[in-house]
Image (tube, rainbow, N blue to C red; front, side, top):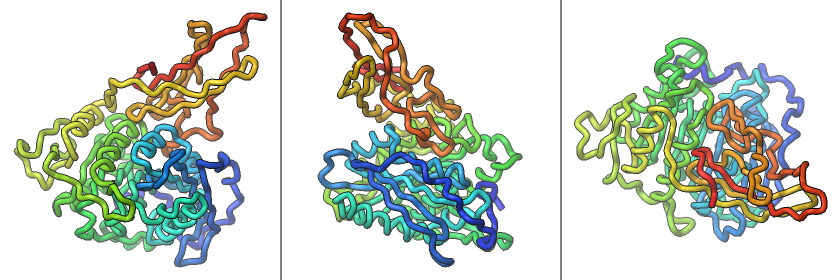
Length: 438
């Protein structure tokens, strides 16, 4: 069995009582909104779940929903509580007038996460319900009608891929980090059900994104089955003409690493191509006349018209720009960026304490801020920025690609101002490519 190493799989009868480890999370004040559903009986979603959504301030009509879905296990589930607060993912959502939604399933550590990561086990229905309820709560009833762009890690990749296969008409694109839906049954795991590939799913752009240490270059260990499952899913989809690619992270195992710098760019291209101009209209067909192709596990892509291999076994990329970024990513994850981030706004002082607001750079997010007093740098916030899983990032990063909890505030206290002197302060954003705001 290939992808079973991704999940902790036990029978539903082994579930133990939940002891409320999910009661500490950022408050959902507008433009954030949250709903929570209790566990249901067998045949529906058996875990409680929180859904938190962010809406771009001032948006008149939402065009789509970007879903950031955590993986399996209690720690990953908790990390979903901050997903909607991610400044970098918010930049993608704002560009396309989309909402950013992050679920957080309350799955006990030793429970069977298949009971939520397969959307047919109740999580698909709960997701649809939350869109309607959040639409009513936020004053945006169109949330229940608009398309979805799906990102998922591990079991979340299983979930996102399952939604592609069960609701292909609603999915604009799906990025599957270290997890894919299963296409074959396993008699030993009765809770795991295979999927079939409907023809409509072949029109949905999909990217499989395993780490190289998950069975590509490292063939043993806990996550060695990830690549064989990805390969099976990719091969089956691509053989039928599916718009599917593979982007192997050359640095990681199951952790998310620097994938967001490729995933956000890829989703940006897909949303640009597919979102309808009018809410309620069907998704636009993804154009294939600008596609590029690459050999599976290769590092060089060419325009489809010049590709000499078998196109139905090749990695599919939507256009030349994404293909060039992909070539950087699969070599060393150093996706380039030449544009500076947006400058911070709303800088205020309260005695020696500064506060400000900032939007993330779409390409490279926010690494840190430089604080200047009277034209000279005096500090960075945070100092130093940290991220055990990839480029240092202002908000920090948990295992399932979400900000640290509690959230890092945009604030700084000057402990060494000159007594009796008025000082002039400035805050500068620095993105993860090292570029400073103007």
